[in-house]
Each structure stands twice: as C-alpha cells, then as structure tokens.
Length: 279
Image 1 (cartoon, rainbow, N blue to C red):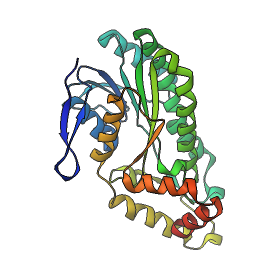
Image 2 (tube, rainbow, N blue to C red; image 1 turned 90 degrees about the vertical axis):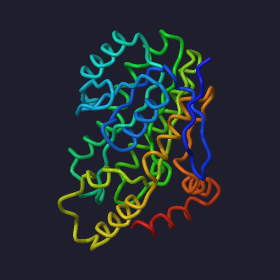
Image 3 (tube, rainbow, N blue to C red; image 1 turned 120 degrees about the vertical axis):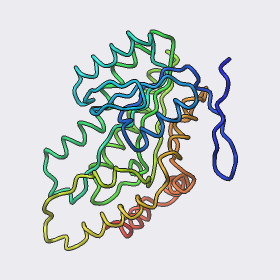
C-alpha cells in the first residue's frame, strides 16, 4: 500500500494524498494551476509528465500542441513507451477570451473551442485506451465556475467550460466499467498568468458603451485577488487520490456556496445577479 503524502492545508491542518509512484500527465503545466498541480504531485512522489507547447523545466516534458491530434497521439505513445502506463490525467491547458458575442471574431471562437474543448478531447481519446489496458485510472478535467454561472462578455469561455463539464459527466458513465474515474474541478477566481494572457476583442460595438471594459476590469480585479493556484492543486491531487471522486467539485468554499445558490435560486434571479456584477 502506497504511503500518504501529507502537505500543509489551511489553518495549520494537513491533507493526506496517496499518489506515490503514480504516472501523472498534466497538460499546460508550465504555469498557474497546471504547474502548481504538477509540483504537488511530484512532491508526493508521483512520476509527472508535462504536455505543453513550451518545455516544463522541472518535470519530464513532451512538447506538443494539444489542438493537434497527431501531436497528442505521438506524445501519449512516448509516455506509454517510457512509463508503461498512465494513472492520472489532469486536463488543465486552456485560454480565455473576452468581449461582446457579436463583436468576437469567429477565428477567436474557434481558437478557444479548439484548445479548451477539442484539445481536452484529443488528450482524453489517446489516454483512455492506455488506462483501460492497465486496468483503470483517474481523469481530472479543469472546468470553471463559469461553466454553471455564465459570465457576460466572457460567453465563449463559459461555453467551452460548460462543454468540458458535460463531457466529464457523460464520460464518467462510459468509462466506469473499465475502472476509469472522471471528475471535473470548477475553480473560480485564481491568481495566475491567465489574467494577463486573456485575449480581448480589439474593437467592441459602441452600443455597449463602457460595459465591456468595466466587466473585464471586474473579472481581472477578482482574479488578481483570487485564490493561489496551490489551493486548486490540492483539490486536484485530492481527487486523484480518492477511490471514488465526485462528479464535480468547486474550487474553494466560496465558489461551492455560489454553485449551491445557483441550484436553489430561480434561474431568472441568478441571471440578474450575475448581470449586475459583470454586465
């Protein structure tokens, strides 16, 4: 039986993670949540593999653009040849765009779906046969609170993350007979480079006045004052440690409350509140 890895948690408590010697693949581990997760897995004794367009300095790294299905196939083939199996997959790589729906270039819409959804799908399609062959595994897909609380002027990001959450829930049922567990983590505001790298519309219709600019400013302020990526990393490693992880889990207690209220309040009221905050 693999020993637990105990790491500090909030208020001086410790959390035990059981991932020692597991082969863990993390996409987009060059920064933010992906890097923090890869570092924690490694600290707990896992063999970490990073798949990203840029090289990950601290882990076994394979350079691949996950929007390229053939590149992903080659990367997973390399991992199987070197390690023989994949125990955990963390689909973290993603991007954001902001702006009014009518003013967003279709090329940008295709780009965000290409990475956030189809990139995730490309990796899953290659990793599942490897996990099935070795008798099981765990897939953790990084979604977002925005998947359930769609944010004005961040519509396409919300749509891609809703797609990831739906894919995760359906895939869980498909793969259960093979011992493969699928779950989604839904972070809220997290302090990472994601904020500065968000793609923004060059021009927005004057009809919106300064609403787009104010909405994005609110998002960026909240993100810069958000949780550290290590907080989400703890959740991800905990999910990978569990025998039967939940279908989805919020990234932090505050966001768990938001999602609970989203369930019990009338949809019209929730829409009104979110619109007042961001639109």
